[in-house]
Image (cartoon, rainbow, N blue to C red; front, top):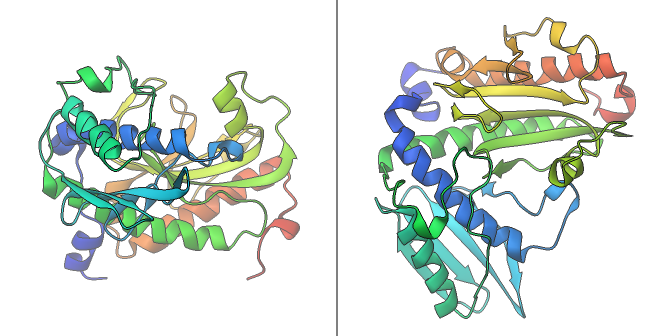
Length: 305
């Protein structure tokens, strides 16, 4: 892959350069994600909640509303929020610099105008010092170039994660975008219950069974504490088996005691001659380390080469 191709598919994304836009986008995706949460029927492990990478951006996928369906799409190419219903009704709202309060007002009013009223809990989650959507005049930046770069990265990562998912014949999550932490993730399951699930209802549902999870996170403040100034790929196991954090992972990735995960620096990936190969090696190596340490039945769970 040439340097110019690398720069297009894997653009630079230093957090300091786009943190204001990140803060706004994070809240906008939470507004839309909470609409999906309110409308979609429950799925195990809260799989009805995330958004999904789409060719132009992020999408809710179809959501039921009475005798109709609708979806909401972030388009980071033409910079629009598109709301489309199964009866042909469609509205487009421009994505531009505006407060979260204004975005929330526009989206909810547009849904009412389309006869798609939805009531959500207007409090952000997984962020320090949350501000109600209808009162948030703090987050209001939108850099279209930064949004487009994030989209290109998500499209590239989504393709690799889906290829990785296809190598596993056991239970696996979709590749999905969690708007709570603003990360793209995919999770594999051993099929065995977690003997010590978290007491929290949501986390207990998410981690009711043994998992090895991988993802991409663009950086910033982690909900449980800590901060990263650059994007990373991550890998973790729940419950974490003895010996997992001591594994030798290739490409070289450090286990973070603070985050409880293996972290692979995005800039190291994008500067390599084969970013996709580096990511796949990281996914496979960390999965193999976790599966071996936890004694998963790999012959029954993995597709033969």
